[in-house]
Length: 317
Ligand code: AN0
Ligand code: CP
Image: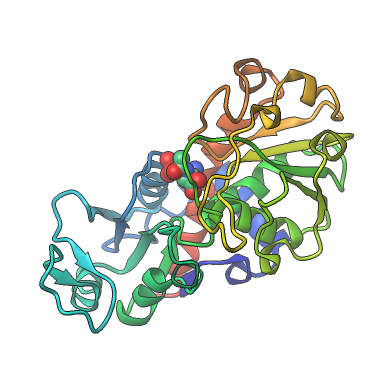
């Protein structure tokens, strides 16, 4: 595998999940595959899970790991070509990328949407340049429009916990005080649409996602109606996608918070969230702490999704 940025890069999902479960059963089965190979993780944004789980996955494969926090200690990077660099940015991505590529075998990049220029975000300028200029296999650790390692871990988690072959999975928007990217919900929709699950998306009006991601999923504006009979409730906040409100917070209405009364409408659903989560905005304490909440095993599966991707990239070197 030479790149991992969207669902199509992983091939048939049943095989990917099978490989993930094999790795989970024996995560040290390939400790020599990564010998003398170096992973470089480049973060333009903060992270807890992605940083730790991806590093752990690389260590399970015997790799060496380097981590660069671009905004802490590195030169500030210019990303636009053609600008006169007389501001605070000391280095251009076009030099920095091949230099970083020269020190490693595989590159992971986290670069969130800026949420000001939709065309810029949806062109995936930053990660595309890594793919083009690094000379290395590149995987997304959440780019502007997708978070595929998260969605893959979500899929593995649903496969582990589902009690019916074709569960009803409901992704619900929930309130958050700050503007967040659409990457997690876009990606989750893209991956769920690649399964045969009954997939429903619910959000307030104005929060419609890019139809290239939501595809044939059912959109239901009445959250309670959407939640009826759900087997999995996947909560997430995102900022508006539609013009003229791109990147804006339109509502922080806590009537959309996932609470016990909402969960009572479901088929005793499992509660999921990618984390980090704001308690009592997105979800109440009692729901996230309940035995039906699977946010911790979901996060634990990030190690597994990362290990499948790294293993396949190492095999292709
Ligand atoms: C980020 C987001 O919503 O994209 C990362 C989630 C994995 N969340 C925050 O910035 C809180
Ligand atoms: N879910 C996730 O990607 O978490 P981090 O932002 O902490 O990496």
